[in-house]
Length: 431
Image (tube, one colour):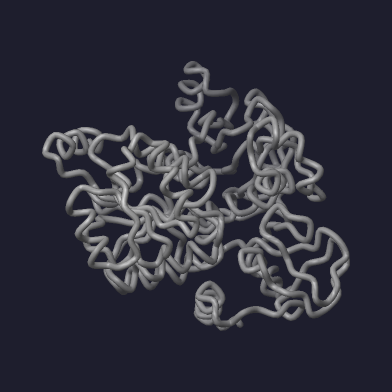
């Protein structure tokens, strides 16, 4: 068991040493979570804001005199081997530190996540991304490069895609037919949400309004479900998915196949639901044809009829990322990775009328949001992947609600995330 292996390492004084590319709220939360895990430690934090990285370590209980700042490989190696925790400004440098067993990235940025992951692969270092946005944007090429280099590339446990993989594996192992996989959205969908609109709610939750707006406008949900789709092969039934209101009591009937009175047009679809009873959870709805198994599941109060939903009522984000990171080191197993070819994409949509010269903002801003669709449609439309959108300049006007295409923007081709995406698309004759 992983827990026993970690306790053993703790007793031996041989913890798994993790390097974390961390920033802002999620990164500091990851550092705090690791402080409670036996047999593991965040030995190095890469953060452009060095004082913020130091503060995260101090907040997790590391004495200030045990923290050092360095930016050269040799010095960092010596400090870690001597038992110090190190803060460095350059996240790519994590890949070169031999004293680290594995690296993780918990930023929101596909650009940073892709850069860190590629550096790790080049230097033979395993990488686990908490950053699902990077995986959705360039995960297929990163996985291919990792396989060629003989290192592990994985998305972490904890966020909805990682939790869904557990449930999907569970029902597949039992031999049940998967009809729908999905999540319960934490708030009603409003694609027009801006930081101003959600400012009061963000203040009450002590969260960044931009971050909260990316949840409300659906961009985060689209990233999550696209990550899960590309790892399982399950597909959305329509652009943006359907997102019906549902409760645990009626979700099985809602996602029954159309022939049985539900909304599912085919087995193996992916969606989300709205409503408080399933908020924050993930679910898998299955169809069971065997009358005996139906009767047993009915008796066990899993559901009724021939459709049943298996529901995990929570996901713990970065708080449970340590499980997948430990599994990668101890068992050499990937928690979640994309299939060889993508099945879905998150396209960029104008949140307002856009004009040449305007710059697209990070997810949750005022300029654009993301919407999921099947990859064939995204390619037909030449839709700009929303993971590439932060910081790009418009060169053509686009009306509110329209898809932003590759040709509507000017991309910085020198950025690793753009180069990787070009390389990924070339695998299927795109670009």
